[in-house]
Length: 153
View (cartoon, rainbow, N blue to C red):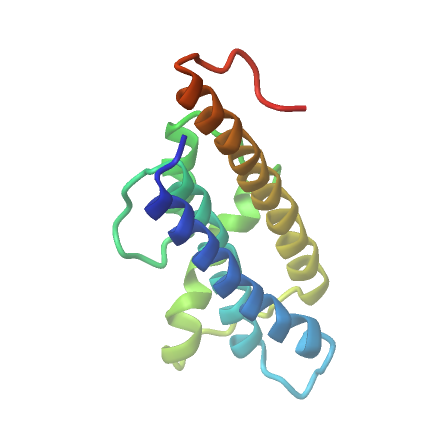
């Protein structure tokens, strides 16, 4: 069961990711908004959702924008990622290089970005909700001095 601090951090990161996702919802179809700006928010939304899952599982991670590093930590804990690992890893340059490197010329696949963000939303929500549903049952069982044998339905 995650600690209250881990749960609080996970929900903070989810809320922060939702802020990036709100920007994407409003601007992803606006072709006057440059790809580097949108790519940054895609990367940030995904990064924060990965960090939320790590936080909820009380996995320490370095302060980084490397989606590859965060994904590897998640896999090391035996947590399955969505079937988009290659697309996730391609996001890392959008955090810094796309914003500050004048030679970054990659185009953002806006439709693909929408699908990727939606996949991470569903994946992280499922994992966070499952841990949250298990927490009250574990707290109740702890109070009774018994261990939970299965998560709540």
